[in-house]
Image (cartoon, rainbow, N blue to C red):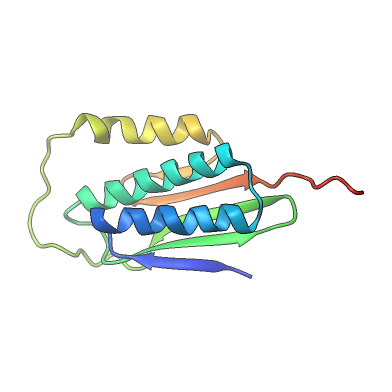
Amino acid sequence: MELELEIPPEAEYVGAARLFLAAVGRHFALDEEAVADMKMAVSEVCAGAAEDLASPGVLRITVRPAEDRIEVEVAPVDRRPRHVGSASAALSWETALREPLVRALFPEASYDAAAHILRLSVPREKVPAE
């Protein structure tokens, strides 16, 4: 089973991505702190795509549940730019901190900031037998 959400890379839709991940966290009874970290990392990828004039037309957030973890992937559906124009060469402080933040939250994650691709996993807690 996979769960997917497709959103345009626009700031207005980052909240929808966060709500989707919160629902995933509740459904799979994930640790609240892990869900907060997951939402932060995915938000940063979505925000990066929103700021990039050459970003894809649509981002897909895919959740793949496994027995011991939840795998999350953010990736462009296509590479056709949504805007025509040149991107600004100046980096904001938010942009400069985006990759270190994601790496601090998920050191084992695969993250390509320029391509707006993130793959991470969140451990599922074992439910004690009664």
